[in-house]
Length: 619
Ligand SMILES: [Zn+2]
Image 1 (cartoon, rainbow, N blue to C red):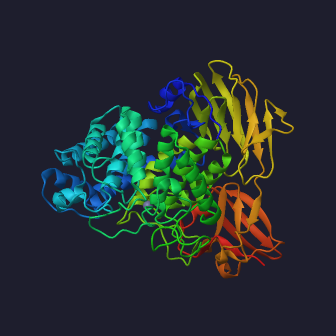
Image 2: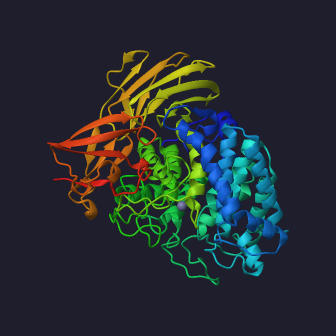
Image 3: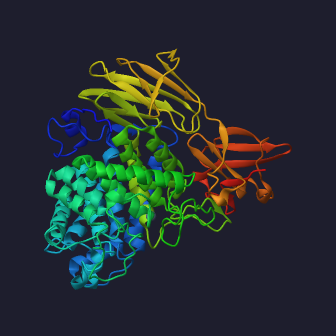
């Protein structure tokens, strides 16, 4: 692995990457991401989504949490030390995730009313904390004597989501009340578990990556140590030993030490959070063993266990993996949280390697598997994302297990994270989303403007609006894996044959204010075949255009839905339809005198109920 210098100034000022990197030591990750708070999204695809997130999605989450479920009441009861616990034992986590979404929203769109709501919740959390630092409404209300006995009761999982919310809220507002509650809970856990104390294998990972965030914001090495210790606890037979509950080693990713892992197994969301925690610890501890394991796991996920939508975890049975190439369409599980997890993990992998293949997967999961998880209006959510439906699968306002709505509520307002990165010698452009961004590249302030009608059109212009000093760093533009041909022009001059390294076109020159890059990605409609080992898709093709996977929905194909088919003679016409599904480019497939219509997969189930399929007969 190549290792590059990044100035410690950049590191500390923009990204707060902690104290483990010694002053003169090269960072283990070559790319530092540009935080979403430096990026204002302005395009017509994402900007309305972010608006409806702020006005609708958060309101739905708050309403469900306060008025339709007992989630806030659980905290109120826990504070009083009496009353019943309602819902599932990990319901606290949804409140924390919604709060994290509020925090990100406040950072880009200050809103006094929303902040007041957050403060009100945080007061209730703080009041529910036990004198010894423990916080978990389920055990507080059902018997504190039974806490820390069953490793699958998500006590550390809930704590992890509280820590993530606390860090986000502290960074958004400077208020540290929840951060102090989190520190107290972390210290409580560390008083019980550790190298010279009790063993513990968290049944649902999440605490590991959260502890790294707590380390980042506090600079306290002990939290990083604890995260690392928890990762190392796996695979040594400590899982639920001597406690309540049964323990399936594969389901909990506890069958072998994490650095020996080769195949993804078990519960998909847990696996994603585990890998994110491994990536975060590896970056700070320079752990090549973790990174090597993740390379093996990444191949296993993407080559043998991933849907075309970037969704993972095909089975309802374990919310996770079965055998390689077992990717059913009607019965696909593809939990929304797992697709969001793919974004989180692939983002980290790209930072280690500077390889565009990770952002290709990130983009696939983001625009398809994850985005399908929320309705166009922002008020309904999918938990399960099948690739075919008989017409009975619909988004809901909420779920008994509401991990997915709260996941979307924290994911959407932070998508600005995935657009840019900075390394010692380059500015990286990963995603094509219209935005204005202001950040520093190795100590020099830069303002960029990206204009595009992506994902509907492949034209992108990137303008250096201002720069504190001429930028000698290269600009590296990701050339998406779906794009076979493109042109790049700098200040009106088309580049004859740009150098491409690991999927990035490398533009080497000194950049000044006013410099303008124009990219045109050819975005043809393509019929793609699955790996032949996926039996389910034998004799079928899926339609893709740019980063979007398409599907046929009965609403557009009444009367002939069950007869639609593709052939080598099928021709495709893509056209933007402003009045359809908030504006989408639909695809008309024509074969002789027959034709049918496809829409982007993320937009399905936003009209009257009907059948849907991604994989279409090909003959
Ligand atoms: Zn979920």
